[in-house]
Image (spheres, rainbow, N blue to C red):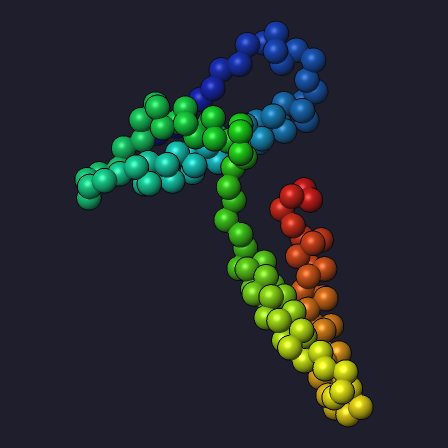
Length: 133
């Protein structure tokens, strides 16, 4: 089933052709995000094994949630991996920090390599955070 949305001409009169195309893309994306959120809300409220049904109230709740908190996006697997890597490498770096053992070159190299992995993973997460969009 295809749903078409009608917007009055007076709202669109000052838009260029590219702006009209962009508003169409953005509205489609927003509506899909609201529908995804409505599906999550319906799934969390469903108490039986019955068929899922998204009601108008659930759509309204999804819109309110989107306005107040933003749409939750699934994190990419690469970002989840980098979060785990940053945590583990930081933990190991802290555990390896022993100034008495820094006289051994191999130990210092191991410490520096793990420290570098922790820094790179953390910088990657900071630069690719979804809040930076």
